[in-house]
Image (cartoon, rainbow, N blue to C red; front, side, top):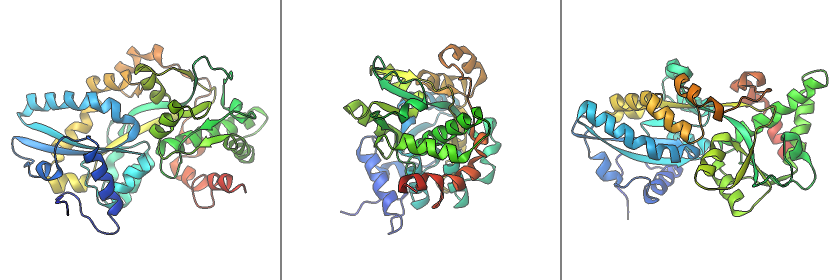
Length: 355
């Protein structure tokens, strides 16, 4: 049977995007068929907004979307329906490039949005939005079994013999790149303690941690699922993911390393598709709403560090700032990181190859 999906251009190069969207629809992320959704006129009483997001934000979005629906209905009289797809950030970006026609995207890192910019899907001015286009922040943290039986205190403890470590695969997961950046950056900080900032020392430190890797999963959410299934001793992940799972009843100890990286997560209108679908007005309103006090409060409840200063101040006791916190600029910015760490001859691939 050949599906009729007006918003999905299926060809050989777009087959991955087709499969991702079908998976999202069939898994219950959207309760309507794609044909029914695309039949709703954007200027009528009903509009459908297609969301392509990274996996870790899914739980918070379950609370945020109904709140936006209520606000938009009250302001305009128009009913918003959503199609939602949640995947590892890199996978989601590739799906949108491949033909998944998302109106709005929420991704793990700005580099994934930049991929959409290069393909002419997102405006080069997306960073001109408040907070540089970011809607949430977090830090890389460590999750251990309840009671922290191995006494994990920092990234250095992940190099010890017999400690089984989990983090996702940076080829598919934006979260994994944040994890690798944090470990590599911690190595740079440790080298500075000994006299100078030394990339060779940082690479060796990353190698020592990676020797203890137990599982490389496709996304941060998949790593958490593996950990909860009983795999490994320590999971390297977003602080917000650990706090969200604790909120749902899981038993973790959350360890904040002295040296770790500040995570910033962007959202943007996918201009090409929003214009094509006639959804720009509601798409821009939705991205703006994600920075509202109401939405930021929800993000905070799910463990994200808010970009809204009022909400952040109200939650500052929940989010201690480690003394050695650094951001992506400490590693030279994303362009430098992509070249140094994740290019074909970069440090990460040298670590994988044992070079």
